Length: 385
Image (tube, rainbow, N blue to C red; front, side):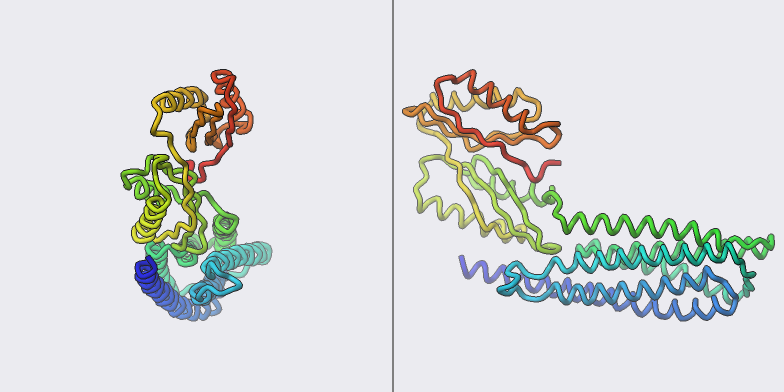
C-alpha cells in the first residue's frame, strides 16, 4: 500500500507542479499586457483630459497587481506540509483570491469617487482619432485577455485566475464605455463620461462584493462538491460486499486538495483481516480515481444471519421513510437477545426544525416496537443538494 501511495503522491506532485506553472505563466502574461495597456492609456488620458481613460489605466495597474498576487499566492500555496501545517498551504490561494476581490472593490470605490468629482467639477475632454483607435485596440485586448485568463482559471481550478479574468472583462466594458462617451461628445458635444464612469464604478463595486462573498464562503467551508461526492460513493459501492456508503465528509485544503472520511455497510460475517483489506482497497481506489485521501473508513455491520432481523429492518425503514424529511437510514443493527436496535437517520436541511422531524420519526418506531431499546442518532448528509 505504501508503494502505491508513493506512486500516487508522485503523480499528484507532478500534477500540482504543472498546475502551478500554468497559473504563473498565465499571470505573467496578464502582468505584461496590463502594464503596456496602463502606460498607453495613462498617456492618452492625460493628453485628452479624459478622467475615464485615466481611471481605466489605473484599473489596468490594479489588474497587474492582482496577477502578481496570484503568482505569490500560488507559490506560497505550493509549499510542502510541515509540523505547523500538516495539511499543507493550499488555502493560501483562497486568501490571494480574497485580496484580489478587495482590490477590485477598492478600484470601484475609487473610480466612483473620482467620477463624482468630475460630475461636480467637469473638465472638457479633447479626443483625437489616434487616442480613440488605441482605446479600441485596448478593448479588444482586454476582452481576449479576460477570456483567456478565466478559461485557464476554470481549467486548473484557480479562483484567483477566475477573479482576474472577470476583472479583465469588466475593464473591457469600462474601455468600451469611454469610446461610447467619446462618440457622444464628438457628435453632440455633450460630455457624459463622468456619469458613465459613475455607473460603471457601481458595476465594479458590485462585482468586487460578489467575488469577496464567494471567496469568504469558501474559506468558511461550503458543502461537499456534489459531483466529487457522487463519484466517491460510486467508487466505494463498486466493491461487491459494500452494501451502503454513508456519512461522507470532505475537507478542502486548497483547490484539488481533499481529505475525507466515510462509513460503509458490510455483512456482519466479515472477519477483521478481511475487513482491513477491504478498507485498504477502498482507500487506494479512491486515491487513484479521485485524488481524495480517506483518512478514516468507519464500518456499519448488517445482520445477514436472521430473516426476522432482515424483516424488522425493512419495517423500520418503511416507518422512518414515511416521514417527509428523512432522507437516509443507515447503521441499523438489531440484537434480538437484548431487544435492542440502533440506527442513524439523516434529516434534510429543508426541514424547518430538524430535531423535531427526527424525534417524530423515532417516536413512530418506538410505538411499533414498544418492548425494544432504541438507540437512534440524528445524522447529516454533507453533500445534500
